[in-house]
Length: 534
Image (cartoon, rainbow, N blue to C red; front, side):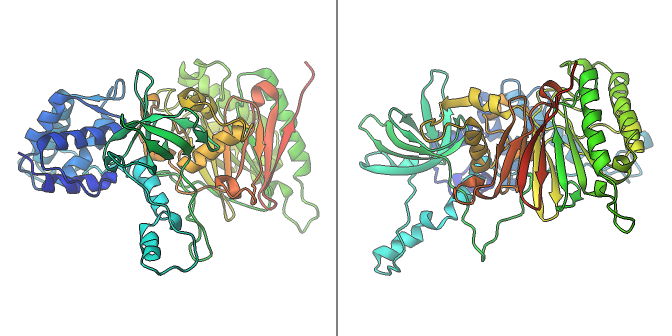
């Protein structure tokens, strides 16, 4: 039988640094909770098999960390997000087979069976809850040592810190409590808050909500009072606060977890962003050529000694590149034809094709590896874009979401209809009385949650969830969805997550003829529009 003191270190990777569980039933409860917090349901037969397979092993940490990582890679595992006994056995059997395979340089191994050694899978990244919890605990007003110093008489005049409670310490304690946890929703509609210790039912009647969407799986701060029935009556429901920044502790470089950095472009020019560039639509191509010819006319050199102005232009083309939802998936020849049309158009613009940068970000309907429901997508395949890359001097095929640098600024572009997904996943409507701009609610939620698509794991398709995480707020956030164009300029007076971030949606170029222009030097975004006669 597993001993709790041996099992506890394996949970430290997921943010559960201390587990005091001697009885087996308590251990089972904690294991089940761990899987639930990562969006999985652990069935009883899987729990028992897990004990049997890991009993007596010395490397608890590595095996348990690898388990969830391997389960997420199983084909079809995300359909119902339930972990059963056969799934656990399959994962361990695959690991054992890899470990027992003879080395490639073993002379006893037939040559046709030789294969490169398989690297040991890296442990999965820390859970979203663990990342946000660490960020909150670093804030000065949530540090318990500060309150203890004040109680001991060492008052330096600063306000006392706030003590964060945990669900396991609420029983029998009256008064107000502040907790940090994950919102969960049962099929019956009941809402609860889960943390390291367990969960507590919530009553949101009359609760004051701060700006943002509150979805299932969101990490939130809750202030409320417990009643005798064990229900926490919520007074305030808030997004986690942004990190404190100072000259001594500058902001970390914004990045996408596990995402490769894109190109570094000039911060003295213009970044022109289009979304829904439908290459199969004649009107969209006519409109695009008219817009690009305008930039071509303005891209010449002001004098013989100066470089062309076109060097300061960076064009971001976001998908979907086909107006029909499934046409791009029908075959390789169809997709090649679409990008051949674009290559021919750009070939007629010599200044832009030789001096400007072109960045391509795939959309949900574009031909790429993985299903269309995937929330992050690899770059467009080289096989589809050979003629385009041969035409352009500076062609960058980026994944979705994409990250690139504008001098010293970080820009992140995400082509996904995040607003619709977030609205559907919200457990309660946003506080319109405090802010009537639904786009601001969305952007604040993305930045404060540190996630580009803050919806439940069960409603997402993602082979690498860390690719959607944000380490810090970027300088430019482009949310290219199907909804209307919006433009939120950086607001230094807001004091919120959006204090240093310009966020906008370019709108749909294919359906409305709208796009956005970002000037990095002034940190200003401008809306643009062109309508052609039929």
